[in-house]
Image 1: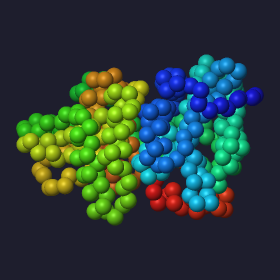
Image 2: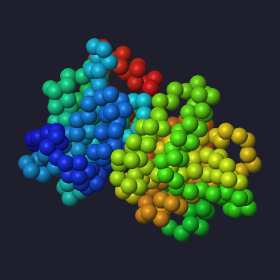
Image 3: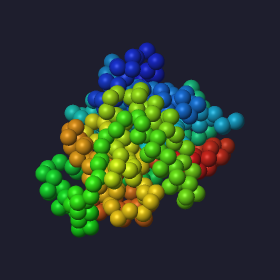
Image 4: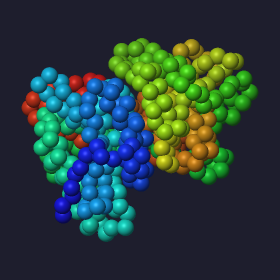
Length: 336
């Protein structure tokens, strides 16, 4: 089976976004505007690749080309910005038999990797798929190393009372008892982005963990992506800011992207329990059915996230490196 791989240079942003919206296993960062912002922020070149069987699109796969001295690397997504997922999205495969699906998907991935090798010839490739991406075997058949990693997905459909009942006892108590406190959780505009990002950076600095996300980058994402994509939520107690979460909404999922860190000051108030509850309720109001808690790979943090009764959901890290590319691999692992 032959799948032609083409760059989306001749498409309008709306045409590319239309493919992204129709595809499975895509998210907000696949959108044209988000890719452009990420490319500027990382000083890289974005290639929006599309696979075609004849005239029919079968997949989208945005990749970023970046040079580190003598090393050329390809990322999807690039490191340093805490962009969790990217990789391939699949189109027009739902009605195919398993045999045809596997053949078409393999031909698409084979074609993308061949395009990358012919046009870019990188020493290093690193891809992270979206949660639930179904078949990474074509990458392994192209000499890539594949490792599973995990996030938590919470089903937020059904009555609120049933949702609360799935939470741990302490989470239920914290959320119900919070009503006695003078607090507000609201979705706010770009002004809230600075407060949230600075709080996260402060928390990471206290743990000697690099954090390269800037308020200006998040504000540009907020301004350039379609309305409602980046949603900043803040929590105020007695009128004072105590915490916030930057969420990303796309399709049927609202994702807990940045924030929700330990508050700066000790308070007898469950800031993050309340924030997560209010965020998922807001997601329900805009038609989302899933709350992605984003990450399930740190035991200390898992204890908090798992109390909401989510399901463990895999996604995949994919890597291929030459001897020279192993230097880029070490840099990636330091900055991702």
